Length: 235
Image: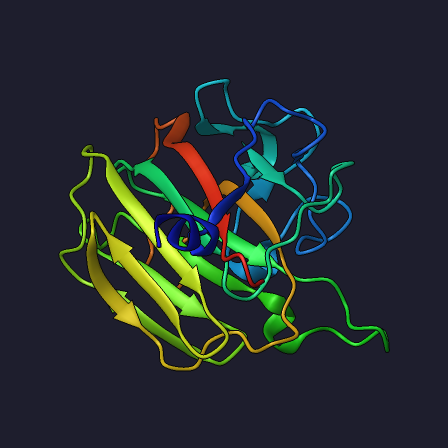
């Protein structure tokens, strides 16, 4: 019985450090235009290969010229390893955010096109979390594949680490914070879903009720450590 239970336990399939360039590509994702700017999404970001997190997982945004901010981002999409999430995978990470105006930390997914060249539903995007300091104790959780989501109120406290766990099931995406389930969407990602991991920080341009950085603020940050993907034995 013990042996069978061990076989069925999810196995770790990805836990690369952000400094590992075989696993993570810095400053590049097809979710952004080729020039690395994304103003259409209310972002002041400028991503690029020079903008990567620190060795201990601190993602920074630094004020640049002409209203731009140099923002750290990594993705598995263009890395040599090319790791992709599959239905049933479980992603966990310890996160630390700060309620600094304009900061937009996020951990999310982005999927490749189908074999016919069409994008996956919702581009395969699942926002494992987005955070805006205008609502300092709230996490935004969204399954764009199925058009489902939730605002997890009073889920976290700024400046205090929290353990995020997301199970990307075929029939439901389930989110928990510090061991407590905060949302289960009841839709899931389906059987054909495939997606890369993306971790980064954006800077709000001020729309949708989310304030831009205050004058005099030159750097924003958050931290992500221990990011691990586990996969059921049957996947």
